Length: 354
Picture (tube, rainbow, N blue to C red):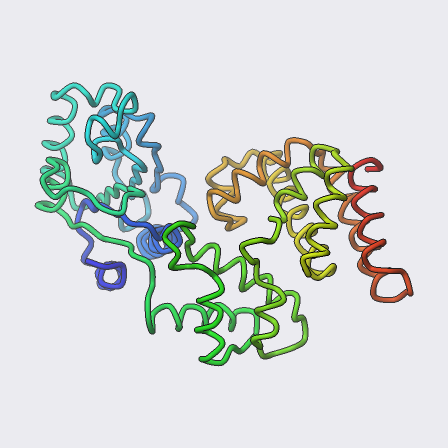
């Protein structure tokens, strides 16, 4: 089944005790899991009713222990197991199989799945584009529960998603420009592994830069969307986080020469600094990585990169950096200073004076 069919089952309160989610669209998987949690769990008792396990680090006993406790003040107990190596061949899984290489462990899990109670919703999540239907675990899940495939959105579904995403920022995008946006995004380029998370980042970038303008034009898309030959802003921020001022200035000038708007570069620096500050502040309050990422809403790939960058800064440094950015933005908009020079000064300050 597809994700729409599954969501209807969730809303109709007809969940089965076990599911396998697989496919290339991480965004849809994450959003679907949010729907399950919102529908089946009282958010005040989420810690007691929702457990996420890393499939590479679990054995049968850990899965059993997570599933056996009954839900508390909620409809269901939800257990998520991500990237369990049993869905791959022995050659593909390699050393990740661990104790699952023993036939007994696999047999115990399959037998347990066949006897799951209605109070439970056990969800296996795999980032595989295809899974062999002859896989014993696949067969067991199909018999007791169901399999949900998360493909890339296409046609009207994708157009509607893009339009709705711009609406969240109070922006309108004509149909013709939706098609152009999709083409420019490389979403269907098999070599780039783009997901809706990447499109969401582009939509946010365009919407924030447009500020009070309501309609997204082709010119906006041309000037603001990342192009294949443009330097990734992450590279600039990596150099800043490593205090490599010479390389940071070099990267900025390459982006400037390629036509990247100065205010957009500044916006992305601010966004990254805020994400780093939020991560460090939430970590200081005792939140887990999973909880932090749920609150910030980044893709796993981007979250990991931001997390690594944040280790090079203290909270006071990040706060001072944001003040420098605010002053630079004000200076560019209210004085005669050259915007390129203003950002070079900012980058120097971020590298050496915070």
